[in-house]
Length: 188
Length: 76
Image (cartoon, rainbow over all chains, first blue to last red):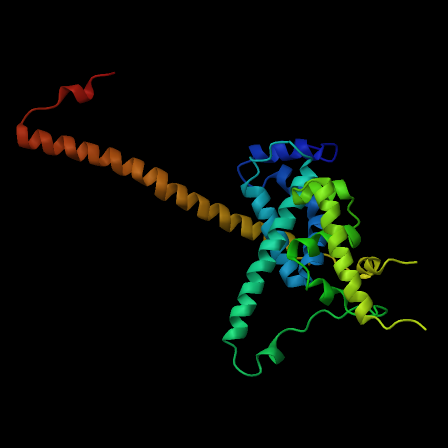
């Protein structure tokens, strides 16, 4: 059976009829592995968490494979699940870190894994500045500027109206721009 | 002029680890196994218990009264 000619929606319908991870679901994983991985890696910032999140995304897609109603494109539904999963993971990770910080003994910070280094050429650590934003705004900015999603795609993924999506991105961008200008040395 | 946020696109995204598919498959299998155990515990076992107790009840009633409940065997 050649599944490569099938649309995403046809594959999803076939996967919904499978009782386990059969050829249709494996085909969907093959199609979306890279995109889901990129979203998870961008939003979570390290390989271990991204791997955990991407697996969780596909697990949710599998367990809820009968719920896709076809109101949007299947790809949008997948990215929306990926976004929500990453946001949940970041929130729970933040809560856990806060809890661990409170009960940490001296030297706790030194034992934590190092944050990924900024690539050479970045004037300052933009990723750290993004951490100061609201979680959803941060995710929208990353998907827009790092992954190149259009406003209408982002709006569908985040379940917002296009105007609300534009407004949130613009506001987050202005906030970040003002911080960026404050911390970047002015050219003479 | 280049947008300062365009720098985000310069951050390198590594490929998924090679064992990604295997780990996903294992996770799916674990989750399916849990789902089946839950279905067994909440569906199949209560159903079997109900029918077993029904028979035990009928036996007890027959032992105590000496009458066999004919209605139970009548088709609906």
